[in-house]
Length: 349
Image (cartoon, rainbow, N blue to C red; front, side):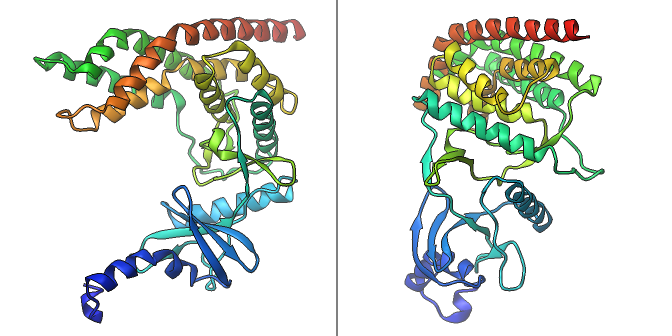
């Protein structure tokens, strides 16, 4: 035992564990004057500006790729966060419990408000600017891009698995009752989405780039410089840029009852910086058609104890069912837009 070998009692052990951020920060060439606990990270006041110490799950090589990519984005005109190296020129720093961290610049600012059209437009433009830069960054020739249709099929299989589990039960709880009311509709949407994604992937017309991976209202901020900037790139991965846009739109629309005006504002702002062709629009449509939130709720329930049902999951599922009509109305409208894009592309030919 690390603590016993040094004669540390329980009080010292607790204090030792509490100071783990300081231990990780000692690996860097900087002076820290204050540490503030943030959302899953530590905001550090240093002699060279504010830094963010973030827990990191991944290999050193992947962290190196992330650092290089962020440096490329900054060189191409977007002042995104940069990752610091330790005194030994390593990217990952570890504390005495061998937990891994990375240290990056802290971009102070306010998050995108889901109540403000202007904020949502600003976030959408920032995403388009990011994608314009990332499409210039060469992906390694041996890199593998996850198949979107296979991912969709796996999630559909999880819905079927949960359905079969519920059928075997003699009694159903509140969550299971709601699930059984709506699963067929969502499963049908998921399967249709998987079919479209398979067709698009087989056509080989979409070009993968590095994507943000978690672009939502929490990960784009309005900075003191008066610009919208993406933050928190730890989930960056090779994929299709439409996945970032679809996630952003889904989050905004879920908060705004799938308001067509909100969707149009986000799309118009994105397209004012980066155009979308008919293939991109069809891919976006397929991604938004997929019942992502329903799958997340099902996955959370499947991995939780069945002896106690989370009331929050029940409320979320009930709200999802309540908004399903508005969501489907928007998907019909988006389908019409995609047909228009396809028609315009055919006319151009």
